[in-house]
Length: 109
Length: 116
Image 1 (tube, rainbow over the protein chains, first blue to last red):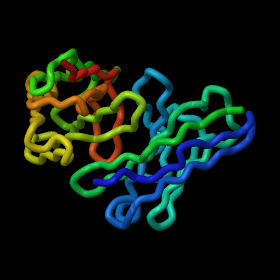
Image 2: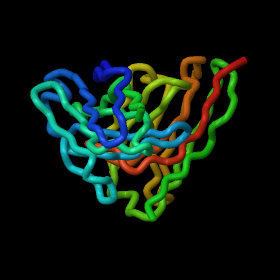
Image 3: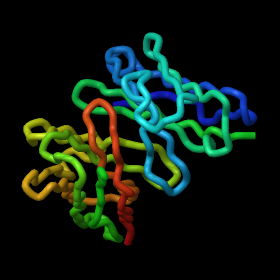
């Protein structure tokens, strides 16, 4: 039940792209195509942005994309906008439970 | 509109108990797995408990195993979390959230503070 590893912070200027990594093990990220990503603004509940590695729920801009290779998943935010500044968490299904990442604060410079 | 509304949070002394509730609306509650996810102040997310749509499968994180009990009442569209032997480290916002392989939507959260 160890948390997935994410970089504490990431940043980019408006219009640029930022990529966040999420590293787990073969028991979670590497073992299932059930990685999801959540955006959380201060004082708000998390919001699902990506599920099943790369699928975007209805209403999520296509600037958000996800991928996975081995035990590491990634979230890319293209064309950064001011409203993208938030905390981002990855999560992986792990058979009988879900494990979350340590979280990454994205700053729009 | 799919909605989850938590209630029952508050201030409790160490060793005390609290019962959280989550009222679901806008979807067929009995068809969905549910979760309790917590977030300590300034910290990350932790899925502490999961219950399948029928209640037949339940999971607890090691941090709460033996102290917390998840349950659901499909007739009342409600999810519960009974929290006993509370500790200072249980202080957090507790979210009710729907889903098995991913979590969506989330409730607004209810704050539990464990302090003397």
